[in-house]
Image (tube, rainbow, N blue to C red; front, side, top):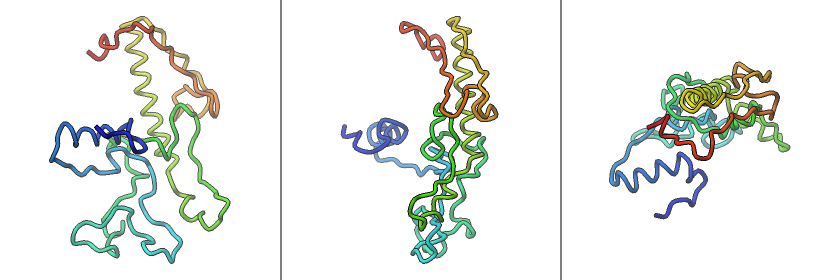
Amino acid sequence: LGYGGFQGAMAYQGAVAYFYDQLAPNTAVELDICVWNQVVADVIFRGPAKMEHYGQCREYPRVGDTFEDNTPEKGKCRDCRVLPIDQVKSAHYTACKKPWECTLPHPRHPRDKSHVHRLQELTNVTTCGLLFRKWFDLRYDFENQLQQVGGIVPSERNGKFRPEYFGGSCASTGGYIAMVPPAEDFDITRIYG
């Protein structure tokens, strides 16, 4: 089918491309990048100040709009880093890092100090933490269903690293407490039909 030649092809990006190319050809929908595949990344060109599109949205201007009007102040894009979590439909953990890595993103300080202006606010730690919490809530729901259906005891949730975000599944930075997996022959349709 020709899929797989780009980063993320085996993940959400590939599923969407496959859907619109194979299952629903000749149709299209523009998705809000803050809601679908939310990355919690900065959407504004932040510098240097002499850069051509400084202060403008990273999205290409809509038909009829100009680059000069393509700014958050004029309502042309919003800051995905602060979108309330209850509005997010799917998340992509590239900027935040993976939940099971048990680490919080931090401002990057490149060797080339001229890049600090664009990296220091790349993501939002609080929003990333709340997305981590949502991921762990889904994991706990799965573990609880495994316990109800298959008698599998959930993993310990007594980790001390940032429990408000990691829900007790991280003992320390990088110290992930893995879930107890079901047996190889466990029929997952017992939970998800």
